[in-house]
Image (cartoon, rainbow, N blue to C red; front, side):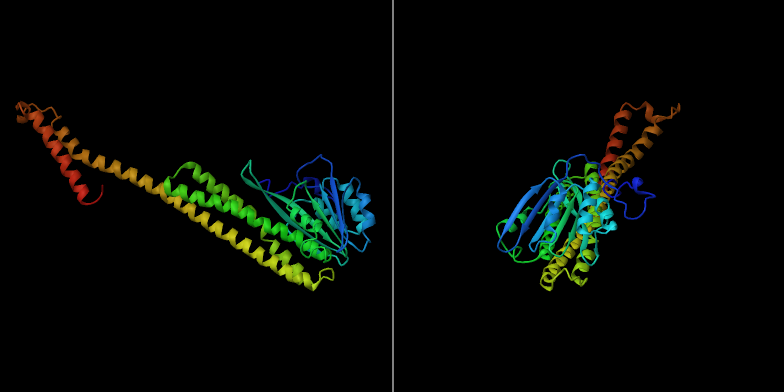
Length: 354
């Protein structure tokens, strides 16, 4: 549940716009990187102090400032003062439990989304909030911790590949958004492999651990849906918002991201339906196994009913029972009991109950 609900006790009662970090407590240093470019020139560096990025605000080139770590609220305040970020935007940046959304403040566009990564050790999906601020000639990205899916974008900028060096800051924001959405497909591929593996397990054998795997994957799908579903509204708002910061040429690419988002949502819904079907198959298989066991026990009990009757008749200990004096009485009764058992087995086989 920690992935679904962030603790907000420290935020209760404070006025709107109070930048209080909500999320996993961190103590590491904040990492700040800066990329400045246009079609002809490129510069990349790591900066130690947030103030070193301030001179790039009014440069004609496109500047991408990436901040790894939002637990240092003083940095958020400083960059917010310099770039004119609204107090509510600053509050949303440090609140890592935000629902994906987009807000147009005129001088900048703010949108937040969930970046998903697959944890190989724990075999589960991890989510990290990414906030993007799109200005006239700059993009500021805020991440909870180092490590992201933006390396391909950085490589395109460094090598002047594609359109990114020829376009403005809005195209850079689109590229970052597209990188996050494309990574969703990789996550879904990994989860799809697990769903297929569960299908094979259900066909071969039904075990208790299979139910645990189904429940775990259903929880993952709920988590993915919660993280991805609102993104459709974000991309649609960016595409149709009419912001002066987003050019018509970039809107074409945003429509492509919107299509990818819909495809991701459809895939998640398909996997949810498949897992619900697998759960029904599991419960049916358990019920069928129980019915098979009960059928065997019922047949055994039914065969022994007449045998028990015969044994009960000759176990009543009456003084005058002529069969008790027969020399062949004991083997004869055993023979009769065996014949009764064989007849009943043949009858069951004829009825195809065995």
